[in-house]
Every structure is written in structure tokens, then in C-alpha cells.
Length: 172
Ligand code: 5GP
Ligand code: MG
Image 1 (tube, rainbow, N blue to C red):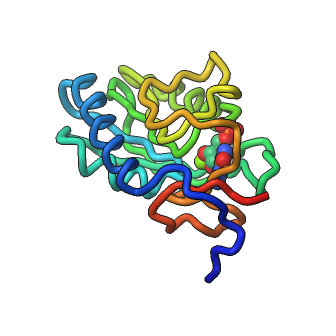
Image 2 (tube, rainbow, N blue to C red):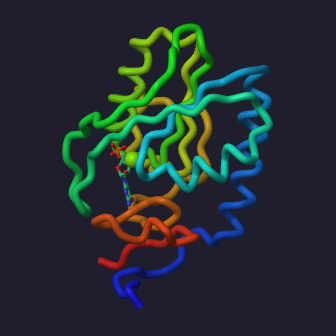
């Protein structure tokens, strides 16, 4: 019902939960104190909410919105709304859903570097290593996946399927 264009489950809910808890441990040991998490909305909302509850660090949360995908064909990413507190001398962790061509995170990382944070690192739930370019670092990666179009757990196709609790490959 309503999921007729979804094909097979790629990453089940329990596997995501397990990986996020180990990813949170990796992140926790990388920081000693207060961090500012900058979420790239909208795709990262589910990942953000699960990850932050596994992170026993003092944190502030800011967000930026970036639009880049229209359905399955990529367009140039554009910054939308921005809500950030002072980032100068802060340890900033970007949280995004997926590193694909890297165009989105290149834009976001460049913009945030302009705010002179003390450090800038990036956590993504998914990465497509066959496409991710070397100039766009992601220090914390949940899962590497093949070059396919996935939905669920925050990721959409034409605004739908973000609420699936697992990651699924979209049927073409
Ligand atoms: P990039 O700019 O790295 O090519 O793509 C980043 C953005 O495109 C992601 O934040 C996400 O919003 C969207 N995107 C990239 N690959 C996928 C995918 O497989 N599925 C979905 N639903 N969105 C994707
Ligand atoms: Mg995104």
C-alpha cells in the first residue's frame, strides 16, 4: 500500500541500529567536549535523531537545508534555510544522509569553513564509494553501498518514503 515502487530491503532496521551505535562510539572518542552538530536537512532527520541520542556529548544542533535531487536526476545543489549559532572556534560535526557525488557536502563544507570552526568533520549514514570524490572527506561513515538509488530512513523519492524504518533500493 503506497510502497509499490519500492524494491528490496537493502539495510534492515536492526542493522542500522547496530551500526549507529558503533558509529556513535567512533564519534564520541574523537571529541572531548562540546560540539556543534550541523544537520543537512531534510534527508538526515532520522539519522540525526537516532545518532544524537547515542552520543553522550554536550551538543548544540544547527541545520541547513540543501536541495539537490529532483527525483532520480541530480541537479546543482543550492543552499536553502540556515539556522546556526556562532561556529567560530567550535568543533563542528556535519551530519548528512548520503555522500554520492559529493557536490552537496562540498558546498556545505566550504560554507561552514568560512565560519572558522576549530574543527570540521562529517558523518554520513551512507556513502557510494565508487562516486565519492577525494576532495570531500567524510570521517564517519555508516555504510558503503553500491551505486544505486535508495530510499527510506530519511531518504526520499519525490518526497516520499522518508518514513520507512529501513533502507530500500528503489525499483527502476
Ligand atoms: P551528492 O550531492 O553527494 O551527489 O548527493 C547528496 C544528496 O543527494 C543527498 O544528501 C541526498 O539528498 C541525495 N541523494 C544522493 N543519492 C541518493 C540516493 O541514492 N537516494 C536518495 N533518496 N537521495 C540521494
Ligand atoms: Mg541531502
